[in-house]
Image 1 (tube, one colour):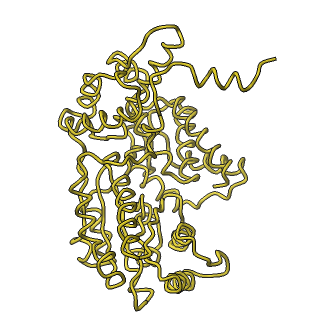
Image 2: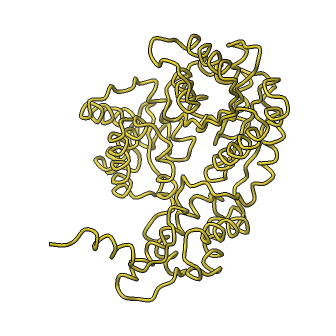
Image 3: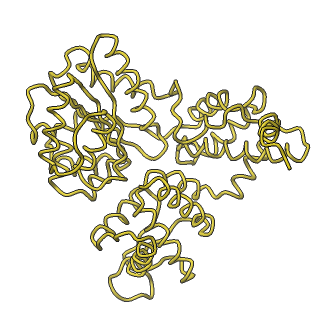
Length: 417
């Protein structure tokens, strides 16, 4: 019979390469953001009024750029700093960060804002207009101001009803208030022209003046990011600069990669975990380029891209991804008919006791997943008749993908999402 305390101590004392591996997790936001200082300064300029003359205006800005370019981290860091500066001046300012991919309407977005602002408003029995007015009234009562970031805003642009889009983009045109307490940051992965085309139909040219571009990272920028995060995550001397250089050249936008910092950090983390396994075999280990090569060979980089996106998807989007993977596996084809995918999706929903989304919503989900680069869509296949669409993943291994999707869905179910 073993002693649990001794077992815990043996695990804690076991040598490893990581000082704190959570510093490489996708959700971790570091104190400093190398090579995003300019974007941070632009945010401060746009929202300066919140500290100088709160309530005088309501700012809106679009942060746009591909996956892993620092949009979310910059917004969260800005939220922490600006609320602290406001507090020092006696201004009650809070920051809220909403993942729109897990919401279905403007009302559900505002409910999440309410929760993060800790406001006492009933969730049931109020429509969108009533809830928005109650939100503003409660903020007036508490003399509260807020900056609200709507992350994964592409979900709103591609799948929300027109009224809901209008409510979130032109909030104070729809819900009037003498003091403008709410300000908005919209985060998008879409190309700017596509974002502005949709926004222009709703907000006119106003949004075009307030956009901040996040370019993919170059190799030298990724080197700095990897080195900075490694100093937090690993014991001193465990990783040499040539490891950072190798990953940076692999992922850097100027060296043929996609410039995704989160992918670069994921590779470094996986290389570190591989090195730790060798410690268990009694070897004296550091993280080497060979570990990075092994990760690149065993963990397809396309898979890393998909896995990095899963936390930002709703349960129904995850079920749709699982249906696509199962469809590809069952048919053995490189692309699978969306109609067949929808049949599998409905079966998965039935097995979980979940009401499936309608056909139109499924179409929006597929479009959204394609826009994010998670799936590929073709309108026709050679040798196939008809006008049906077909969907597939990139080079990501289906079995590995299925395991992680299933695990993510199970975790969502455990926490009641």
